[in-house]
Image (tube, rainbow, N blue to C red; front, side, top):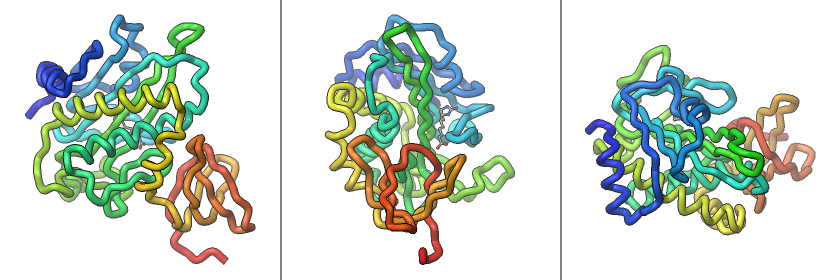
Length: 270
Ligand code: BTN
């Protein structure tokens, strides 16, 4: 089934979602995030952009997001946020929880956890990545563009090409052995993310801590955090109420990490 604006809208209607959504669906685009970052302000409070493929899909840390045509979800959703919202860095964690929650309500989340800050992981392989970018919309507000790349119907074994990710990845098809309706998934993810962001706007990250602790992929593992200036190794001890990763480093010092790439460090730490 192809991506279809009318189907997305009708699923949103079935889900009783009544917010106004401006919807842009493309057969191909460079990057849905880039598109929404440059799109002028809209009357609608929510703008959705999705595409069958991306020619320059963007990942975190300047990486490329592999976007094979018609198989997966490449979508970006834009919200207008008051500029004074603190803890914006925790927003990406909230979005990953919303995607996980959508999969849970559709009964397809068994065994999926979240690797800080926002990768969905199944059997040590990446299922979904999230890239959040912001632009100023007026002096008091920011446009927040939430980009979601969710591997839905791809079979990674059929993608042995130079462009495919060189790190292990997986898809919902591998988990469920079924091809899933991307229009329905997009509608559900949009609705859940909207609900979570409204909670986050009022109460910040604290209401999500318990949910996070249930799905924390890194907890108790030996990790390595690669930052531009430093590499930190230690044991992951969960996150703070602001969404920072807590690591007990090799000098037994507790470090609070706000950015960087986390990976599992396999060698014993002595
Ligand atoms: C990551 O590196 O884990 C984040 C990947 C985010 C990919 C999505 S696909 C839709 C949106 N448009 C982009 O160019 N990137 C994001």
